[in-house]
Amino acid sequence: MIKEKFAQLISKRLSLEINDDFGLEEVWEKEISILTENLDKTISYILNDCPDEEFYWMSEVFEEIVQKVQSMDFINAIKERLKKVTNEKYYKDIEQEIEDAIDYLE
Image (cartoon, rainbow, N blue to C red; front, side, top):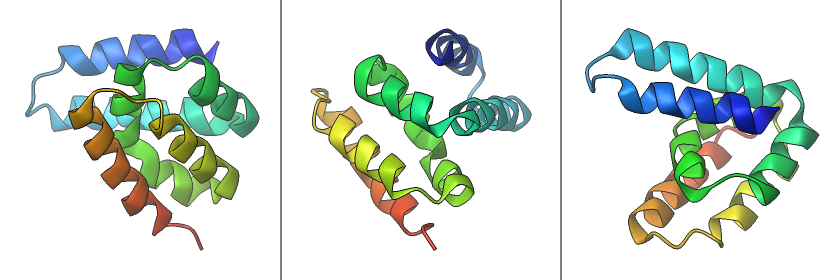
């Protein structure tokens, strides 16, 4: 279920104009809602079903997810998933987003 919903959101995200702040905020809020609804399912999705491109776009909301769920399991899962990313640009950007998100653990 997460896979289908998230794929639809990423498709919407990619169709937005770069300056569509309202549209971006709306997509990000829905992403956060989906990904924090059931953390175990989200972690399973990230580790087993999430394509690199979707993982890349998901990284935009890592800070907000960590802030909301306060889960080291989530951090460990995204770090583990990062090891499988082959696109160098994606890898570096996601790595930075993970480092930034860790600061939100209390």
